[in-house]
Length: 408
Ligand SMILES: Cc1cc2nc3c(=O)[nH]c(=O)nc-3n(C[C@H](O)[C@H](O)[C@H](O)COP(=O)(O)OP(=O)(O)OC[C@H]3O[C@@H](n4cnc5c(N)ncnc54)[C@H](O)[C@@H]3O)c2cc1C
Image (tube, rainbow, N blue to C red; front, top):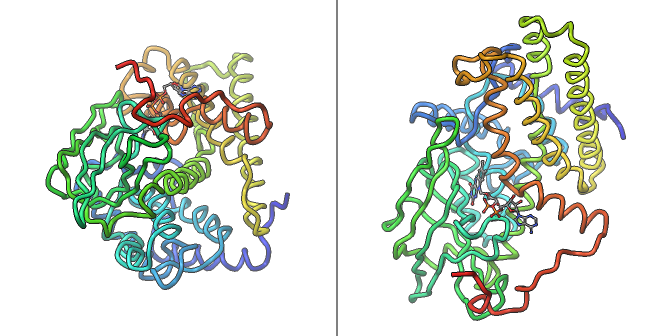
């Protein structure tokens, strides 16, 4: 493991920092973490995010690893990580492109035709269009291949009916990536086809879901005879699972990479413990020290990913560990921070001590432990693919989807 930049990496970091310093302000210690698509509350906020993305794209700092011909920089994964580290030091608008750039773009770049890449990728890079992910359904989350939204071919178009759920930011988006079932007579993984859908199409109804933290960043999306041109199909008919796996691999990598479990909140916790007179208690200090040690463990494990990237290797399972351990750590810290605050811990984040850091962590962490693979699914992956334990028994793999018992 090497903690230092190579001379080339150091030069790239200096160049990135100089551009950022000329175009944005450094973050202060009390600045909130930049929010994401799910937390956008106004058109103005969305526009600010689009403007920042455009500025980066014009200067060649958007989508660092993507090919230059589609608007990217054509640089290496480690340069992308360095850019991300430097950008995080500056005050920037919300990142509404996490799903589009983190998941949709890489999938189209891998499986799309040249025409599809030309149509969608440059406008994603320049921030003109925002994307969402239409995968989960009421009865298909962890078991995504059990999805039921149907697509029936009609000439040059497909007619889509069904329901998706938990679609982050659907109400703000122009395009969505959509997995459908085109054939229920074959095994569940074989009957899927993948599309890009125009979110302004007739027949799409978006209903926001009111969340525990009072936000409405997630949605139910209903499809009633929605027509999608065949030209928007990504991959072959029946290739949907293979294409979806590319999206999911990118999703886990982007969530794992961005989740070090609690950010600067250890210092917030120490300050809060001092304010309420709890820092003299050795048990409190011990708990905070435990959190710190876990955070450092995550940080150093993250360096393994960076070293692998720097040496041109593909990162290993440590990216999944980052999400598994980091999300639980965030929940434990949120819970302890609220306990420290006593009765004030039950206030809403906007009125709570430490600017509501711990309430926000506590309310947001259950979602983090579910999104992009639940704790249990990540443990299954680690046990099967890392520890090489026997795989989970799967009884529905070879059965035609229509014959899989559902209990209905
Ligand atoms: C913050 C957030 C944002 C999201 N954004 C999107 C989005 O933009 N687009 C989208 O399509 N989806 C999105 N989702 C949905 C997410 O992908 C699903 O919630 C997730 O895949 C889990 O599926 P589920 O909710 O149906 O739970 P289920 O799969 O029904 O799981 C229920 C419980 O059973 C456990 N379980 C299930 N299968 C197994 C197994 N084989 N072994 C052991 N335990 C198991 C799970 O771990 C969980 O505890 C989002 C979710 C969250 C929380």
